[in-house]
Length: 225
Image 1 (cartoon, rainbow, N blue to C red):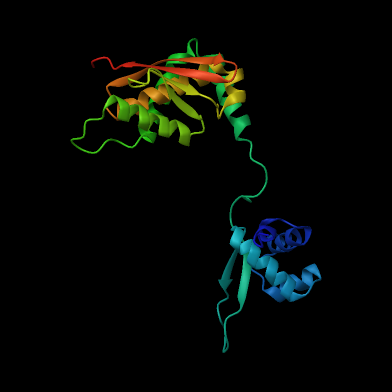
Image 2: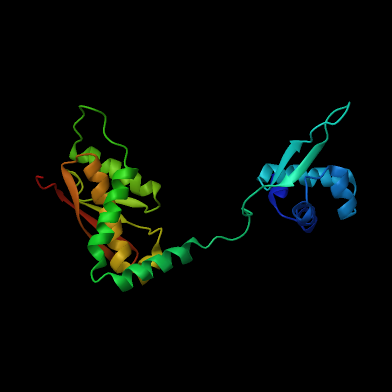
């Protein structure tokens, strides 16, 4: 059993400790908090240290006004509580719906956005190194795997692959709703990654849901710039 798991879980008592600190006008010591919550100081100390570990509370030393060791005091971390739910999918849906409603043809913009990020995410080749077609496809497949696409290079076994099967979409619900933006963005991502390598191959097109559970990215010799 992972003993640290319980320290990361917010309990009613830990919430009470945090609420006392947030309502105080100045940092409080362990005994101050224990008196307000009505529990033993050792219990409060345990929860305070867990909150410090989580980043919700800051521990400092009070300025000493006389002999003796300065008192340790606690105050809530300035900023939004980092616990709680996130709504990134809703945020993505809001932005995609805005783009879809205002752009007469959002596909080129999506491809260019994907291209820029593909170049950013793909580490460049070493100086004076010429990337082969096979190496470029291997590097692209590794990147797509890291991003959650579960890729599988496919084609003639005696040649470099001419397509990549994407067996998982990390943005599936968004792609189903806004495929006219999300799918071109994925194509642009692959285009940018291969361009970053100055690869002799490029992602020519992406066929969404070519099979019930697979999208297919097609590869072709890169065109001369």
